[in-house]
Picture 1 (cartoon, rainbow, N blue to C red):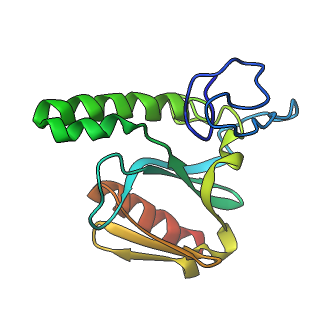
Picture 2 (cartoon, rainbow, N blue to C red):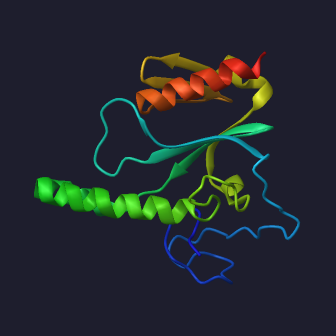
Length: 172
């Protein structure tokens, strides 16, 4: 299994991550994932604006009750970018693999929830009833604010449009 905080590979019975010290949450036996819990999922959103290599990526998961912005930790592999284009390509490939490993703790390759491990690692959690008032769409980016936190994320044009359509339908 992988640490939900740093993404490092740890033993399945770990109570704490040996790399970052994060307490590993126990997923309740009563959790029975179902497709009905997840109603929207989109991956690989980035903060907008100027950022250094190894910027975090964000996934957007919307369940029947909440929108979760899940920050996917990255390693220092992106630092290889200073070595030129080859280093940047290697760094991106490593980070993509790490993101997929990290995601595998809560969602499968078909986009179906497999656990509630995302509960312990989200950056922002917004109740669905408050979502329309806390998200702004501006072209290829979204601005999300809630409880004193604000983040601007950019995504693929199709994903921004899909999210916008989804949020609009929430209030109908």
